[in-house]
Image 1 (cartoon, rainbow, N blue to C red):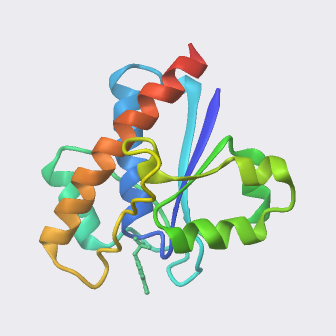
Image 2: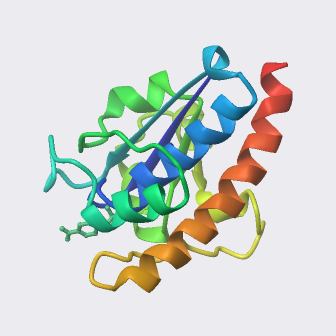
Length: 157
Ligand code: 4NP
């Protein structure tokens, strides 16, 4: 069993999209019983809210199911999850600030490091952008989720 938490700022655009894409990959290979997958925000602005309508739209256009309600990351998540995956450098730094042990810090990763390692690339925040920005984020996340899945799949088999 591997537990994965995707994290962005508001938990209505990037991280619920990553959660939906990753779950889709897991379901396609019938590995749902081997994974716990969720998402959270470093901020609590959108607690209990559905994903942004543009996030829902881009997922639907790509036939990826999405169902999530906004929640804020908590220090307990850093113990529970095996992989805590940040979308950008600000998220990464904010999550590291709440970590209490070295073991917790070691679980925190940057999303694009799985697909394009050692370049410190970020998943750009599409919130103030348009539908094209959401499509670009979907493309980036698909690539990174596939790379992450290929890696973690080896660990659950
Ligand atoms: P996310 O995008 O971090 O990808 O969910 C944002 C959503 C909301 C806000 C900022 C970013 N906001 O400022 O409300």
